[in-house]
Image (tube, rainbow, N blue to C red; front, side, top):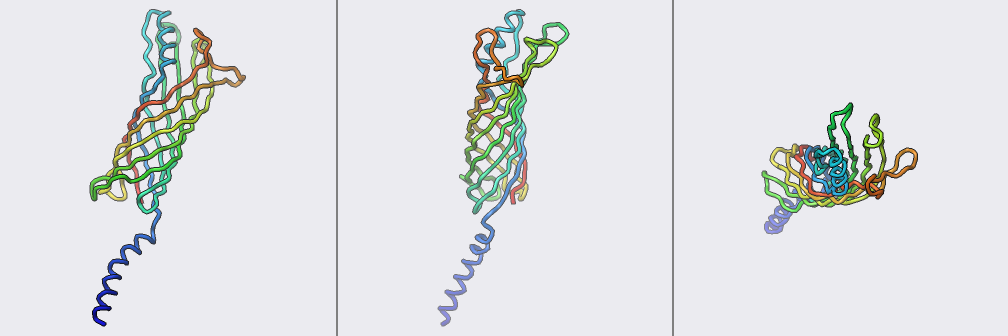
Length: 226
């Protein structure tokens, strides 16, 4: 009887923490970040070179930009998560030709993401390492005053892409998380129209303008995880 009681007590001791853990299998996290992305704007940068050559000047390439992001996740058993997020990209280049206004190009985008993540590695009271993949939907605007110097002509475009991410976040300041997120994004918007339905074209080649936001990115992040 005593042996049976000891076994029952031992089983209870083992099961209680597991039962407590399994009673709360779902957690949430939210974070914000600021960082930089590098863009593969090869065709647009080639166009900048053509424009700048006409004025015997150099126009800055649109090869990177500052970004901000917001991201939320629902975690299951503190291991796998579904996530949704939002990021805003700033992109602008100007050529000061000494007249009333410089030649300006703008290429901002709002990017919405949905995907998943897993906790790949963890060091107690130090950090968690997560890996993830997201689908991306970009709503982008292309604007320039090249053809109409007194105003910025704007064209809208939408497209899909994806991103792969890896991140490290602190786990010793619970519920606060501070970390870094890096990854690679593949995302090209290749068709732009203005409000009249006209397509944005490169004037020197009459090919459609496309904006390639693909490339590596890095965010510094802070948030909470419950």
